[in-house]
Image (cartoon, rainbow, N blue to C red):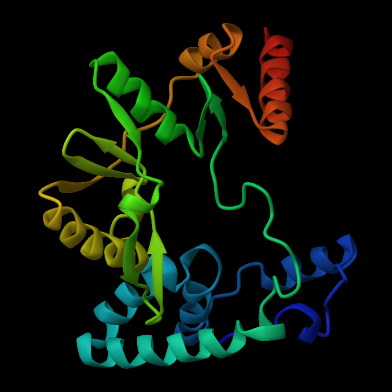
Length: 237
């Protein structure tokens, strides 16, 4: 179900030519995938197990018992194929800003996504006092979908509430559910409450205003993307 990654892949460091890509597209045009092939597609890419879609697919198709067996088997294969030199990031440093949305600073506070920024702006509009949950006092220990114990820090503390900012489409994924389960207990022990929040998307006009008055500063990679967007908008006028 999982192929070889990194240096173990015989195609490592190579790329398909445009001619080769065109031939593949032509060959696949109009071709119907078998149920088994469809299942492999569901397991890969953006629909992998960490999103939870594959488990739901198995649950609907085979029932809870068989779905659970397939999930455990997938976990074992995932663990084997992604350990040591089988991990595509083996021997490489973590990329700066990996896994994050548009990142930068707002009045000196570092935000990792526009949803986090919008949440803070909404709090300030309502005169709420907030601070980040990323300190040792709010370290939450949980067990991830592969049975490994991990720690994470929630995004915000507002009065007696702990908030985690995530797009709503991710709320039912195994990793988020595992974090939430541990966070709810953690919050109760502190006489607090825990809540997942999706503040929605930022208004581009509001972003432009914040940028122009110097209240937000992008990381270099996003600064470049932002200026490119503004340039395209100006050319379109």
